[in-house]
Image (cartoon, rainbow, N blue to C red; front, side):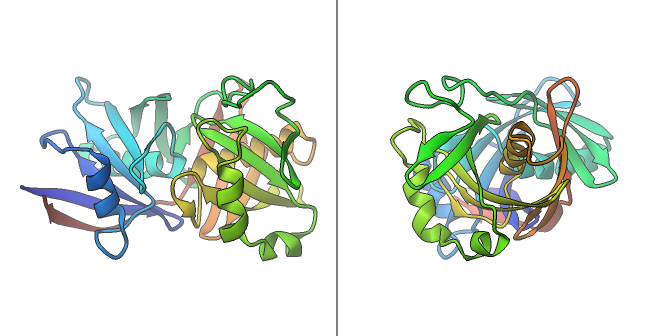
Length: 270
């Protein structure tokens, strides 16, 4: 079976998109791991599958990490899918249904924008293994602010920018991701507020590893900075791959915007 795909990225955070509306794709872990492998397959951080839908402006997607695990939210991946669908269907806005809820997407001055919905702060909703102050969770030698943006995040603020840049994420990331307090593991963000409204962030993504950008992580970091009084409710997040823009709205939902780009299209034989 030959199945077409689209390769896109948001700030180097890259995705394989299968338009599954007319194709039947087996989404087993071995298949996802193989095509997600950068040496043996196409290569990606996450795989996005657009499923059948009954409404023209409503599309359902499933999201998988490159290790084969399903994820509930991916800001950059959702923005890439929205860009693809809006171009294909000649739409100005589109609703993306995920297992974490319906996400409204549109075009903005900063690129493709997605409303990621309401962040969750309860230890049960994140989830954590036991009740604790989610603004100050002990993770080995660090304290983290834990938030769910459809998936669990632990944001750790570093006061010194040089220290942040020199952190060995390859060593620290896997250890913190699988800390016993996270029953479903967690995305780990390290951040430094350089000045009000501007935050430098590095990320270790759950089930993926180091990525050049993470949309839901950028949202979690911006919200955490606001909760801890380190910055405002609107921030520019500087990542390895470029800049994302996050705004925590009056209705308590959070928007994420930034550039997207189609790399190429192709056909893979299964």
